[in-house]
Length: 100
Image (cartoon, rainbow, N blue to C red):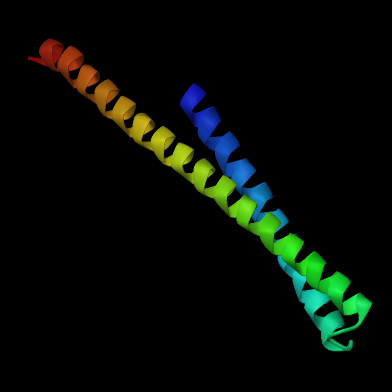
C-alpha cells in the first residue's frame, strides 16, 4: 500500500509540474508577442526579454525536478513489480504444496 501511495504522490506531483510548465510556456508566448510589437532597444522590450529569460530558467529547473520525480517513480514501479512477483511466487509455493 505504501508503494502505491508513493507512486500516486509522485504522479500527482508530476502533473502539478506539467501544469506549471504550461503556465510558464503561455506567459513566455505572451511576452514574445508583446515584445514583437515593441522597438527591440526600448526599455520595455529589455524588461520583457529579462522576464522571458527568467521564465526559461524556471522551466529548466522544473525539467530537472520532473526528471528526478520520474526516476523515483520508475524505482517505485520496479519495486512494486518485484514485490508482486515475490508475492505471486509465495502464493504458488504455499498453495501449490497443498494442492498436490
